[in-house]
Amino acid sequence: MKEQSPAGKPFGNYQGRAVISYSICNKHGMEAHILNLGGILSKLLVPGRDGKLRNVVFGFDHFSNYVPNLDHHIGSLVGRYANRIGGAAFSINGQRFQLAANEGKNILHGGNNNLSGRFWNATAIDDHLLRLQIESPDGDEGFPGKLDVQVTIAVTDNNELSLQYEAISSRPTHVCFTQHAYFNLSGSPSNVLNHDVWVDAACITETDNQHIPTGNYISVKGTAYNLTKPIAIKDIIQKIPEGLDDNFVLRNDDDASFKTRKVAGLYDPDSGILMEVHTSEPGLQVYTANHLHKIISPFAIPLFPAICLEAQHFPDSPNKPQFPSTLLLPDQIYRQNTRYGFSIKKQKD
Image (cartoon, rainbow, N blue to C red; front, top):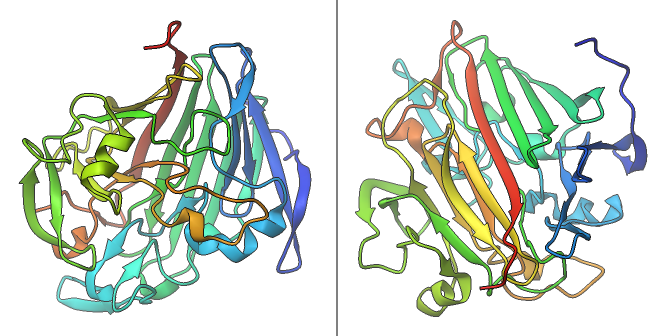
């Protein structure tokens, strides 16, 4: 397919550069708005049971509202390493690499100057497909290797938001990417406590008090983390008042086939919108937006206003050889395929 010149609309300015919003859509009216700053998914318009389009992701109408909240990664592409690495360090072939700690002694979502707050090169391929590219230099936030990243985002006629990631590195390094959308399928500024969620995971990774994995797996059977059948988020919060911020184990092997499978779902009985997550990744970080109500915002944000379903590898995998590997060698290509599919349940439960 012949590439066209990028097309988009001005959305603001940041560090002396123009922030551009790109719109991609399908024949059913589903539409995604994506910024060249951080690859931020600022809007995702999906038809509800009533046929009206609803914005199902948390975001702002003006870029100035994103600026003081960039460390919350609202709707952004997260890397070079999504989630946490304990001690902000890892070793490769006996060489230790010290990373930029930004959460106590640990590193979260790639460090202080991570890719969520940088400009990506955007190319509009056609009305339904956008390609984002960025180069992260060798030593960026302490990570070894020059990393070239490409993310192809599409809105398909099957009402899916599709993300295909690729990356290559000049040196052995560790790589983990995700999309950090905050979903609320009601399309309103309400909480998601009445949403139902399910995750096809028999275990979570045990963590310490800093959210760093111990290396052990914990069975969800008989616990509040058992999401193998749809459960209302309010019922989870009743048992876990602080909310979820946990890695659910979809698989614990090093399968490199990159085949996607359905791993999770989210349903709002009021709007009738059902979202299903398909991914090639071994883990899903489920985060009930536990702190989003504290951000700087022009409008009031309720407790638990959204939920993140972040397909990724496990936190601290570089220091846990028993976890699926995140090591990327110069002769390899990092790949990830993740899709968020939307449909309607015709009748309320």
